[in-house]
Image (cartoon, rainbow, N blue to C red):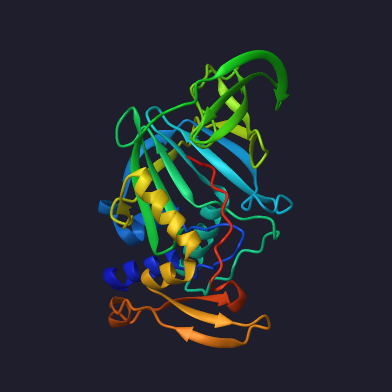
Length: 322
């Protein structure tokens, strides 16, 4: 198979149909290192670091603050290298690895079956990249719309008290602080002297093993970790594959808010065709994207929207409120 065709099909794997739900946004992250090298070529892969520790967190989150009974789950991974840390969703990575593996075998991929309350959040954080003191954040509004922004590494101004708690057998201390519009309560252990934690949290003299905002809308808890001594995992950057919009954090937040306020028109502007259906799934209207560039390349992406939701705002409860 020609290299161009291989590249097209790999991109096609990334752009598996995005579904507009009222739960949360999803993302695609093709992650098999060997497959990336094979189909994109070594020039498209940059190994940023080698992870010496892998930390796993469970995440419980509420995507709609007006519906606190709707609680979703994700599994997060924090890879820690000598210079760079990488935080991402294990579920998103697993799904795309399965898609890539099926593609290699010439098989048509089937969706991975998971519990209805499992949905991977769509973002990647590269802490310490492209340089020390900064981090690169990749955010996915849809599979056709990735935003990337560099920001200074910032931590809350923590207040530490004497409260005690145990996570995975490790004694922890309590710290509280306000960060990006939420009040955070975290438990860290000096027995694991790492300045690290889930998401963008850190800045304490020990690994953060549990973190929750004061409303309980986002709760991270460490469920395991391992030292990667013999087979270190590469922290990679797909430099030729990330076609993202370079922006500031503020510009990304505006684009994100636009999507949740007017998702149908934003999807159309991004190249999606929209099929409007009734409650029984019967098609009422098909709206083609005004972007003809996809049609010229014989590529088509589409999603289905219920007629009752066409003009509604999507519920949204971002982890960053400010």
